[in-house]
Each structure stands twice: as structure tokens, then as C-alpha cells.
Length: 209
Image 1 (cartoon, helix red, strand yellow):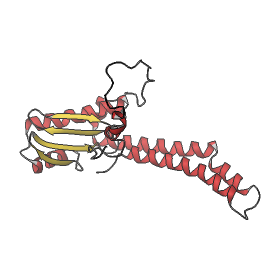
Image 2 (image 1 turned 90 degrees about the horizontal axis):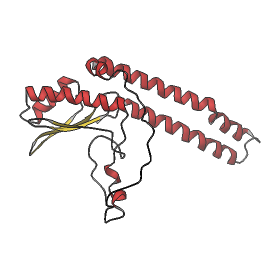
Image 3 (image 1 turned 180 degrees about the horizontal axis):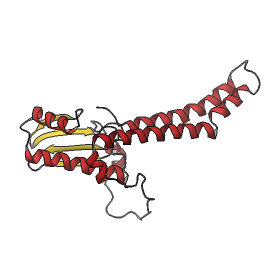
């Protein structure tokens, strides 16, 4: 399944920052290099200007992804116009409730964690889910082939589908931007909006301890 363009851009930005840092260390340790040349090159690569250029490139890719998504799904764009794209600052609260008997429970189930969605992504996912639910309620798919055709017609050709005991299961990332949608095209449909799993992708990872 294709990952959202935003996720790819974020990965490129992070990789560029790491490479910039590594470059300064290796250059200074290279035998036979002119005195100070490695440090100068590393400083240039890790300079604020380089970081700013990388961030600007990321922002341009994000803006293009938003434009492509909104052009393909104008009703979703209208429904979510003005929603913030950043999370509010978290408020520290004391932990409460019973703790799991296994102290490593959280560690063992970390592979099930998903990325947090900002309000814009949450709204976008819910709007896409509403489109699918309305179409599936009007024309319930009889099997995976019909479900695949329905999702492709709505603009989600990369969705994966399979038959389950309670209906046709599906999952995909909203084209260009995300988030992930996972659900069952039963009667009525059940659709969950979520971020990608921290191990990557929208499909439930098979793993753990």
C-alpha cells in the first residue's frame, strides 16, 4: 500500500538532518584532509540555512499534497477547511486506574501503537469514512470484488480488501495525505480513522512478544 506523500516528505526531512550531522563527524576524522576543511563542510551542511531549506522543501511538498487531495475530494476539503494541522499542547495528568499485571505490557504491545492525528487529519478521515459508509449503505458489496470496485469508484484504488465472517474488511491510506481508514463494509458499515502504525503502514502489524 502506498504511504501518504506527507509521510514520505517527513522521512526525507529527518534523513537529511541526520546525514548533515554525520557528515561533519566523518569529514573531520578523514586522514590527509586539509586542516579545517572537514569542519567547514560539516558546518555548512548542518547550518541553519540548510535546515531551513529542508523545512521549506517539506512545507512545499505538504502544500502540494493538500492541493492534490482537495482537488480530488472537494467535498472533504470543504468539510475540513480551517481545521488546525497541529496538536494542542498536552496537559500532564496523574496516572489513574489499575496497572497491568505484566509491567512490560506496554512494551510488548508497542507495535500496535499508531501515530497521533491532528484535528485536520481527524476531520479528513471522518469525512472520507462518511462518504464510504453512505455508499456502502446504499449498495452493500456482496464480496471483496464488489467492495474493491466500490472503493475504487470513490477514489481509493489502493485499498486492500478481504472477506471476513462479519463482512468485507478493508484498509487504506487516504491518497496524498492520509490518514488511515480501516473497517468492515457490513450492514451498517463500521469504519475506524487512525494514524499509520509506528512500524509503518495502515494494516495491523503481525508481531509483538
